[in-house]
Image (cartoon, rainbow, N blue to C red; front, top):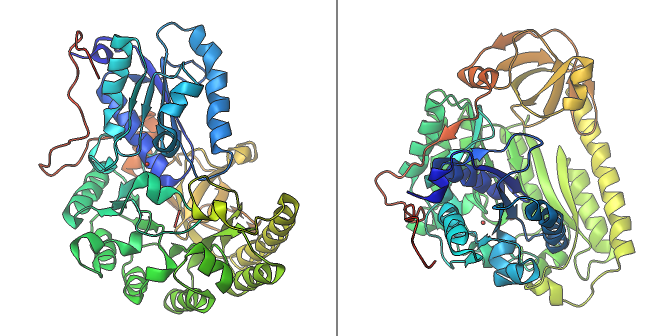
Length: 495
């Protein structure tokens, strides 16, 4: 029996940085720790084990990690037996460097061996020395591991991991590896298991979801998967992220338009509106192809909310290049955009390119872009005033409106709506209301509810339970989940 299993009162906390893949991995880390006998630390309490699930995409990722580790050092000094573990993309990149710079860290593990965490904690505690385990290839899909989900009403499902693209600004392929697809039956079995627990909404995850099927030679696999997922009885909403414009095909648009459960929400990364910049980024599409996709999506689904990612200040970007980006933003009329100031990432081709721009130039362009997008977002939201919307009531969103007697929910198109609270409405329930007011980043519905449907997810939220999902393996060995160690044993995760 492992030492973790002998200490049921030992507590943990997982801190997550970065993308949805990391959020999904963190749910798995929590599930693994609970399966090994740990319990979640109460809010405000120090934990016996702190896990930092890191991201390596932004320039300040390293500083953020080591700053957090510095803050944890005196906490650990004051708590004998406390352990600190670092995982995720930055761990995959820095490896032993983390323990060298922060020798009070107990465990370092990579994106491909999430399942090793409980065993590594046992080894570090028994051997009284840091354990660093970074593997170079995926051992097991994250979704085959147990999960402690944050939400009773929604869940993440990985359909693939890794990426075959070579975008010059991105370090993800080097850290997550080449794309590897799950078989459709495994994915659908996991979705069914979530629905059986009361989940109403799933988001299919992949670095490039619309290249799904390349592993087994089926170019139409993603559209087929959307249709099949949408047919699962009891599943009300299907979302996915993120597709790549170069590989986005009309059969996916048709599947979205024709499958009632698939939400009319599309996150389509642009990155730049300049063909010259897209070429230097190694993005295998150009402005007109991108806008053509937007036009076809809107023709099939006029109510679709389209969001995007944009990088400002890529090496060599001229004012004319930037004006092209602004023009695409004006034509596409995104519901919202995740905008980023370009930052060097060591190990990427873009970091070595000529034409690195001064920070003040990048900042000034960034402010112009965000001002334009806020104006468009607000205008698009104002068009929805007076519309009836169906909301899946959310937990932990828009808490600042609680004093005004409001709760928050997500519309089918992904927009956040703050609405007038009513007796008996819980996170996970479904309500209908009418939009009365618009802001750039949310909507308000201050009138009475038109309907309220109680759900099993709402029951779970009301009971205060945090749902646990067992791994779905379909008989496949869970290679990434080591058996518990004997007490006296020695030795040793953006398109």
